[in-house]
Image (cartoon, rainbow, N blue to C red):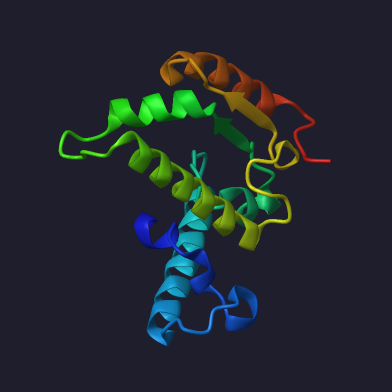
Length: 161
């Protein structure tokens, strides 16, 4: 589901929105069904209780619940290093290939978000907390994030303005 939902998101919407004319109907239908199913799953998980949802346009899908919206980002050198460290052994990407793939992934995420949200992907106005992980071990940031989250949800004023 993740692979289909993060690739060519414009195919998931009517021709008037996606501005595509050569996409076979079945491909569009499948992409629409994946998007709708993903949104239903996100809503169902949120209805069942506290949860953490990473991506999947959950900030928009669950806007009525006023979730804590966190954007985690890093500078390009840190992102590239992290991807190189996490790459599977059988992945033999050159540096240029890896950079191209990373840019494409970010571009696809931004396009998908653009179709459901009024604020661009990554724009600080769309999030309650932005975390720069450049040069940091992500796991080391978890305790501070947990404290922030506790404070956020225990506060009487946690509704977006």
